[in-house]
Length: 320
Ligand code: HEM
Image (cartoon, rainbow, N blue to C red; front, side):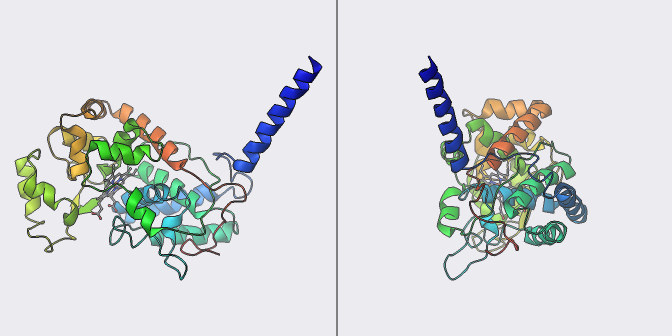
């Protein structure tokens, strides 16, 4: 009896030790003592940036997504190219497209002034994503904190792991499953396309070659997205024509009437397994809000560096 008790105590101790070595869990109160003003600084900066340009909220949310899907949420997306690695900013899904770096840099310098080398760039992205959604009318959630920053980045992984707008439901589901996100998470997170903009080169094929598109919607978009490929590639259109700068469920209502902008948007409502969820989010905004917030927390948990792994960068665009 005594020996089986001491055996189970040692097993518990061993498990605790293994947990400590493999890294710590993220916590919403991670900076409560080390940098109590951190969350307020980020919120104020994001609110001001979004007030100046509403699209910035969309751009900041997307930066967090593009960070998390490539080697985990470790701010690798923010690193400029160096002599030892080619970073992620030149990868296909990012080049000429991701934005928001100036806002992140400005937040980082304010945080460095308040609490030197304490708040990671990866956590700035996670909090800025939440504050962006809130600033434009969307749901809030408690952001888990304690991520650390990578010392490397990978253009190859950005090209392979970020989903392309040409994908169908099976491939989209697989891209999210590779990050341990479910099909429900995928459909809910796609609701991020309720704001922000896309370039003509990413939806031209849909306008000219697809049939599950509202004809008036296609005609209006064609005016600013001509054929052939090469002309007007960078011309922008809102991802959600109904409420372009509000974070709401209009994205899903648009899908019901074939007004999804990207191929990867409309495939979520095209007679397949995700139709039911799209209908549910279109008719019940609270269900979308709840699922979106839960999926954001899950996405923010993708392979974080914790404890003594990685570093706290002094400048988000380069390794210390
Ligand atoms: C489901 C797979 C996804 C695909 C294929 C996809 C693809 C794209 C594409 C092609 C653009 C337009 C880029 C451009 O033309 O410059 C875009 C924009 C955007 N994406 Fe996604 N995306 C996906 C999921 C997500 C997720 C999970 C989020 C965030 C949670 C997100 C947030 C955004 C936002 C906010 C924009 C607008 C950014 C801006 O205006 O600066 N996307 N996405």
